[in-house]
Length: 237
Length: 289
Image (tube, rainbow over all chains, first blue to last red; front, side, top):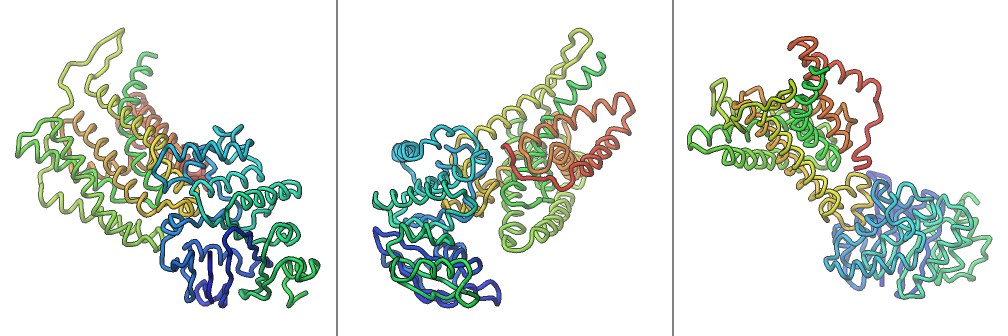
């Protein structure tokens, strides 16, 4: 579904991705685990068109994404739940969801999806008229997921959905991830929380210092080792 | 007491126009994080076009206002292409400095084409003031305030109820997340820039129609009123721009009455410094918009 081939992305002279190749299969949950600064967020921003890679290719359902604008990439069916959620704080929960459907033009379908989101996330329904900035961290994460889903993506990207959330909330978020996947959404998520990510992933990668250092299914590598490398990287471990 | 009420009424009337000028800055600042220093010159170009249509073609009030709006938006397009879109990637200071240069250029062109000190602008209303219980109300000022209020209500509706408004608020508060939703900040910014120029043109037309004239100094004057009103209400806030505009009008008219005409601007600028000092570092674009 998504094939990232030998992507190099740099900030000025500094290469954050040094030739990364990963793939996400249709109908599956794929995880990319790695420590801070390994290049996880850079990869997400490159796939969504916020950053231009120096070289490499990113194919989604056989079509090249490199060179397209973020808006064109959303239109093709790839949506990102960004790191730190980035809800629109001064807009209501409902308006946040409507903004997620910005590129869609059929009001009846948008309204139906809005109802579906409220069904799936009852907490958001309770707070539909409240400004998003007043929600708790977990609620904001759900809102960010629902907002991304409002664009009807075929592939949902998630950048550290567990960041800064209490363990119970993290469990709830990952339960939602698994549910979404069961309902047919393909998911590619980057995480530092290896323990939770390995529970839901069908396939995972380790990324360290801008390079993919492992690719396999959960169970192929001892969880202790994955956790250590996801938090610290193997070089220092 | 009666004087205070009368001054406050007069202040609210002109304050509505100040609020539109302040909104012109706030809208651009919110979406683009840029200050458009050519704003006053853009309004001036519109007003000169309106005055020229009145004088050379005999156009009436509505025709002149239409000419003012059209030329203000056209001048806005010129400034946006030259200073803002072309420099979208560079530091905001570059857009600000280049808009300052365009301010000078536009004013110079206006002065060369129409070199007289003042030009007549069609009057908003020549009806006599209404008197009631010692208070007087000028119908033209009332019309100015009513139109300004109507424009603000329309703007509020646009921001709250339309797809464009939703996108603009998204860009103003979380530009990265807006891009991830498929919103293109550059496009929204250009549209908002032109909308701001239209509002500025409308404010200028209302003020010129109350004064029945326009001078080359209007651009500078409109810039200062807009910037002071925006700052008084809290830089970047939309309701703040409205409140700041009304407050500036009321403060000015009271200062003029109680302290003398020469104090009108001194008090307003003194207040500006005070607000800038107290509120330093607390600007936040479009909060509670």
